[in-house]
Length: 345
Length: 272
Image (cartoon, rainbow over all chains, first blue to last red):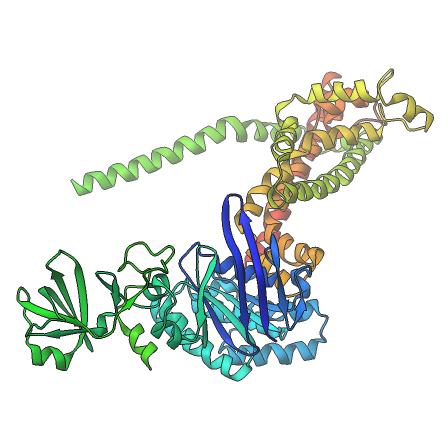
């Protein structure tokens, strides 16, 4: 079931959470709403579920305008950041809740719940209470609960936001596999571009209540529509008017007319990549991402002079980016540059 | 140094315990123990006879009737009112919040008098009620009204903080799973707030059982007719019938204890 939102507006007092937002989510796709906090992504997701009422615009699920439909009739599965587990019910009762509301027969319910607990790898924990589960288990229970009623669409609001890094990574791989099996149209909200690119086929980048760009991870990375998108979906350096990705910074030892002189300030080895930080003549700080092989060839030392040549650069003059303050301060997690790797694959 | 600070910590802990227990013993436990002691000073028979006398049994019955009417009504109202205050925010809420606390702030005797003015002779509502043949004052309806008035805030006060604490996410999750407003309330909200409500019910029951001031004004305190147990205690005390007064006091205390114990047992069973 495809989802479309047309011209959605929503304000909370003086704060405009959504400003004429339109998105198109194809049937069976896995789409990420990506943006910094306050960008309106959660509000948009909640509006699709009917948990927020739009001030203007409409929501269509499978071509039907559901804007006036109450949440309980929209048949959406919704997963909350903090699980929203029913604390007074066991895992079994949690997952069976939607079926009980739909007055399913007991044996049918039982079969369905066990099938789902199997799917989310919680079989054997059916009689536990949510307080006896880990965060990752609770979120899988919440997912099973949402899937039990066979929703038309699955909506996940920062589903891994409250989990630690390792569990997060496992769960997102697992979510992608689950989606491959189930093919239910899924939208998930995240502020983590790496997570979005890892899991989703389609990304919608939001900022200050507006959609900045949508497309595949590759498209966004290779052809960002503006400075905000470019700096949000990956690392960037600012060189004059131009934005350059750190892996597009070639480092050479001999200058020519296209290079800029820089002082090697710091060299950080991050496993498979080397991060070399430079200070340019005008005081600008930039960094280049090198491979181990390149590093060995160049034999760079901290405190020496080297030359930088941007292999590929982008300029958004005339199309000012909104919201991106300065160039190299994208909001992104700090765990280094493997985002670039996954995007390039 | 370390040893000294440890011993002084232990010492101050025991000091605090003695202070706490001693304070409770002198102010709360001693008077209650004395009542029990005084009641059974001459054996079981005198208080038993006084309480099982026709007037005593009638007082017990009337007390239980007021509890049976006032407590459920205040429970339902209290839960609805809490939902209004926490889940449906609007500007008038601060007024409701303030009014709910009135019974705590006003002396019960003033509450009794205000009911008198409303329902009594020349009262605002008296003509209409007299026409309909309903007698409020000096009869059970007036006593129930007084009890509802004085015990109204307890359920609200106990439920509101719990409702705030549980938040709305579980309710929203239930809605996305297809539950309508009533199903969400019955299956999600109510179970989540049940101990807050239960505690409110216990406090309400205790207050209705023991209410004296307001009830004594509106009831007329007629033996065998409009006398609840607290009024029975007072009348017997005034008439120097001490076994009756003490016997009924013990009965009241036991009723309150039973309610408290019942809640604790339920809770323990659930936690196990």
